[in-house]
Image (cartoon, rainbow, N blue to C red; front, side, top):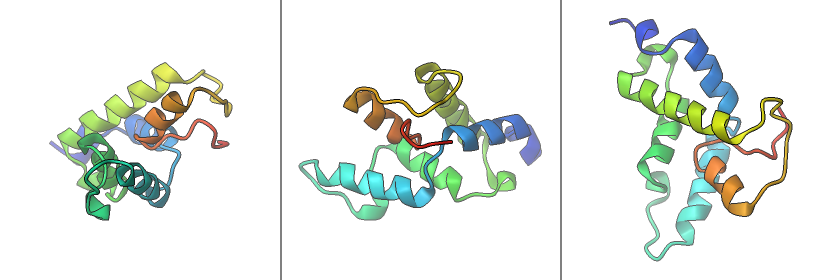
Length: 112
């Protein structure tokens, strides 16, 4: 199986549109979130697995992605698609809604 079989151009593009936070912004956000928990984690390991997987994917070239990465990418795209309007204009929502999307790399208040 080639890399293009694992991650199509369409999925690659949709993921990088859905994840509108840079890896640095996402890492900083996850560090802030982890600092509020009882047991503070080592900064480069902050956040639940999906959040960490998004960061890992952002650091990879398309040719280095695995089938597992493709599954995470599809899941992230599905979540963002289901929780955002088709025009994707920045919008205010509840804090938990925004933070939930930011946890997977999408800030709904960030202009396209």
